[in-house]
Amino acid sequence: MARGRKVNSNGEKSKQLLREKAIELFSTNGYYQTKISDIVKAAQVTQPTFYLYFESKDSLFNDLHQQFQQDLFNILDEQFDQQDIQFLKVVENLLQYFIANPMLTKIGLYQSEESYLVKDKLVKKFEEILEGQARNYPNQQHNDIQVVSQSLLGSILRLTNAFLLTNQKSAKELAEDLFSIYFKKEPALVTS
Image (cartoon, rainbow, N blue to C red):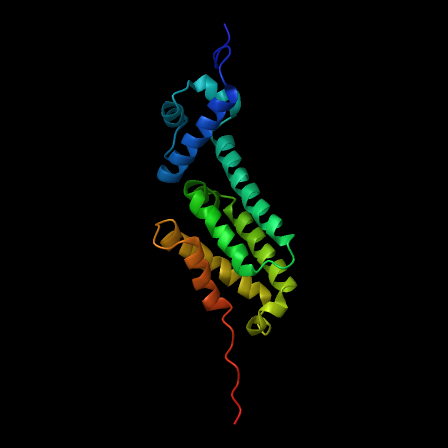
């Protein structure tokens, strides 16, 4: 007799349910404290059903991290294609994704061993955007773009955790705060 999913059951629904429950458990308990048995219990499926879709807990976790990465860079690539989009809007949309996917964000930015790759890619993307839009940010022209991009990412990571994921600030508010810090227009020199 075949093990796993029942005949005529909805496989995609089971897989999606496993992913959703895994996101909840990983983001709440962490990778090491979450067991496959916890995930299948929360999803109300059998362990053989789990193994129909995922090789291991590690492969599921990596799958979630890949989803986060793909979603994130789809947002950035989509916006980067628009030449006139302001960097403020890029950051705001990035933060909106974080707030719409708080548990996946915790996994992708903070818990995954490969989160450093996402952070490196974000820095590179920030550098590309800032280089392409340098004329829009005259007060940053004397700064090293790599330093600005690294600093901005560090601020985004810290403030996302402190204010965004705790619902203390909206994506728009946080993006505006970041911009007032990093890209504030320099006051015009007054000559007498």
